[in-house]
Length: 492
View (cartoon, rainbow, N blue to C red):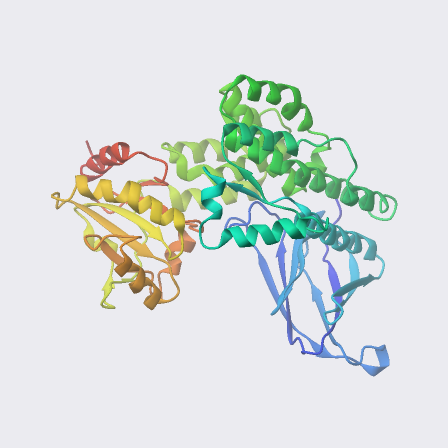
């Protein structure tokens, strides 16, 4: 482990349109893309005109120094037009100069640690090209019927013509269980070395050994993630899936890197978490028990990632957080878990913020104490929100339409209130019998506090105004009805 130090970036941007600011986003530790799970440092820097004496005339320069850290961390570099570095691995004590030519779409590196950043830029470009070569997949019950909608047939024929050039992939249609199984088989690696792996091998003796291992782990994870994700989604417990699981899936994903490497590769720990979820389903074991097979640094990462992504599905969320916090060793992960638990634990008062009704009047949900409250968060354009309202909310509201001790609250997160009001009129997302509210000017605090970033999301408050349940999307109407009856009388 290196002594605490900073990364120093000397940058130069060449662009016909001047770039006045550059922002670095620094993560000493990284768990998940969801905001608020791990602490980030945002470092905005104003650029300066180039200097004739340093040969930088015609460009704009900047210098960024990160907070001190030990070992490895992550950093993204952004400008108003987009992202320049996307979550690069950085090493304490590094110094690098980067020349960013936006007009030529090129990025150059120099300085004592240039190779560590040049290789990551090159791998990012290879990954982009690989994605553009990936065959897109469409799941549909009937391909022909799908292509007859909205002019898709003409677009498909054009794509088929382009695919004959060998430069573009052509969409694959998956219409049934057998197609899903065949798709998974096509994702199995055949042993060939990828262009990215060859590229990384060129840098074996040019970059730190730990960084080389971490980048290898990243590439392995990206190569296998689509396979495991598809297997996890579509496996049905049949014999052919069991055979594929035992003969190919498990051997392919056995851990192949040192603990220090894995702990510094967020992509690889994501892969191990997905592997654990598959084993959990196939062998009927709890994911947490499978985490015990790993050394503490890896186990800690798997635990916090698992809790961050799935805690809304737990009935016993308080107990699960307590168990997780007790098991992990890293203090920063204990802190992350404690923060998540503080906002999600049931039995605590719902955060009081001012929301707006359709007339622009303030509404506080603590005014509904004495009633059980079912809350649904949604936004315009969310197809899953439409389906949830149609299949879950409407039947549930019908069951309690004559119960004045149950209130259904629909909270919209659109930036535009005009868009929200048009969506209310459509009737696709909510009902006129619900209490329809908009986040308003202060409501974003609610999303941040409860870490709501994917939709729809549901919460239930008891008659005392405390959080009774959260993450109800997968529950049946019958289960939610039973919970609402309990929420009316939480002491029962």
